[in-house]
Length: 301
Ligand SMILES: N[C@@H](CCC(=O)N[C@@H](CS)C(=O)NCC(=O)O)C(=O)O
Image (cartoon, rainbow, N blue to C red; front, top):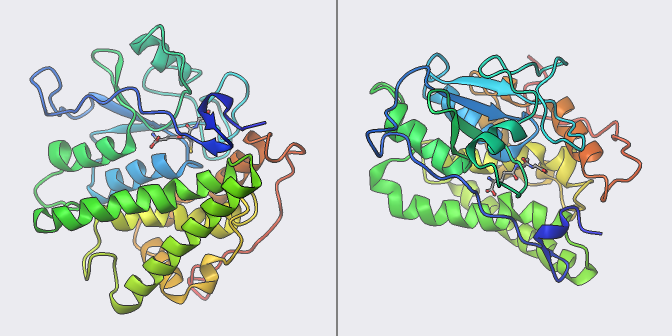
């Protein structure tokens, strides 16, 4: 049985489209006012964590609040409750993220996903696409002194690279993990590792994906790499190699992980419990493995 039967086609995972795509700053009714918008995330989720990281890198912590969901979803979905590293929703008092989806579209019948950017004034979801959210954090909210993670002179190259990363790596691990046919799984794994091999070559001659400056695409890669050896290698059966076996990819992962404020966005307890407990079609016993011990190069100090 597929993990998400409504998103399965011939043994292959077909991810649902993001339902809400309004852009803050693009119209007069959605001005980028501090305190008006709120971010709902899970620390387990690679898509959501990218928005959390971009919010932090651009220094938006005071203007955009965040609520962190319990990494273990029950039948009612993402929930806000007290627990290690997560808690109640201080912005709206939601118990479940589904309340935000229903408030926005009472007929919504898709999968309720993180991240969500919520409008506290209109009481509606603005956007649930991490790509849009990251970009609008930059274009609508970032103060002038913030780094530009989307440098205009690199736009064409960056867009192509980000699309490649999305298809082959970020979503590539899910295509392998959620496959329900052997041949579909094998094709997905081979394509994923071909992409990792290509990225390894690229990062062997330059420090970051587009040269000597970190752009949003680096964080896309990071959000998958940091989960790879812990969950994708075992749970999603992406096990031709570990990231530890790729010197340049591992160096890139460690470089980004060690930047100020990043390690605290990576919660391995949330990550492991979410994947191994929540995907019970893949792991029916819901046993969370003890290892592996990940190495990010900061062990000595
Ligand atoms: N918006 C993302 C996907 C976001 C997403 O799938 N988030 C996952 C967590 S990693 C989620 O919320 N899943 C809800 C569920 O599994 O029911 C995209 O399609 O590009």
